[in-house]
Amino acid sequence: MMGICLRRREFIAALGGAAAWPFAARAQQGDRVRRICVFMSGDENDPVYKARLSMFTQALADLGWTDGRNVRTDLRSGGGDANRMRALARELVGSQPDIIVTDGIPATVALQQETRTIPIVFATVGDPVARGIALRLNQPGGNITGFAGLEPSLGGKWLELLSEIAPGLKRAAIMFNPDTAGMYFMPTFETEARSLKVVPITAPVRSDVEIETAIIDLGHEPGGGLVVMPDTFMNVHRMPIISAVARNNVPAVYYLSAFARDGGLLSYGVDRVDLFRRAASYVDRILRGAKPAELPIQLPTKFEMAVNLKAAKALGLAVPRSIRLRATEVIE
Image (cartoon, rainbow, N blue to C red; front, side, top):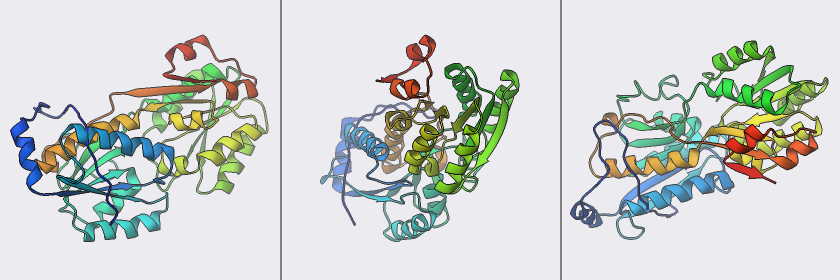
């Protein structure tokens, strides 16, 4: 097993919870080295996942969990491959860590199928109740809790932003992998489409070929636009998506700032790095004796927007001042 290991500070936002722990209680944790497994759905070498792990490391460190003294962490990544994730889940459970931290639905579901006893904290699952991962948000039950990326209103928000940056929008496709994506964004997407008098299109895709075909279809006539739904699959395939929309002159809005940094037009969504920061607090609490079933699932509190001016210029679009002012990151 590969050792990494971690530390950082966090507040705790849970039912009845305060965030301060006495120094003496922390000192007692040095008696035994705890093992934390971090299981990423995507590629551990992707800057997206490196940023999340780095924040988690810092947060744990500030909570008193020091590499080589009282904690050791093993990192595994599925690279977006469902079969690999199932195999890794069996391996991780077999190694009997003290706790497992997951990123995304595929990794979390794979682990849930392997253990009902080892504590699991997820950091970026969309709707854990709808996916059968937890019983309720306030009382998850079982051995799993964490931080959800659930914000159904984003479906409408993405379309609103797309129409704002591309005023000639007539048709908008929402792209997702039907095998892994949550569909809770669809109602607000469709409601906003009716409000804007934009034709909504569903674009289920499972491969680069299907991604390319869907985007080519959108680009056949002026007025087409794309919304990319949150999903590990979409992040793993972000470069083919960005390249295809550029070739076909299709404006697109994404859920993750990494898309805009890599050449995409505009992104808006949950700050997933912040969810990893917050997840460290639950890991800390569980290692000190709390049970996952007693820790309510937390919802996102921080959002981010990034706009790429070079991508806008290539599409012949002027970025409205309203978007520039709201953006947390403007990429020249």
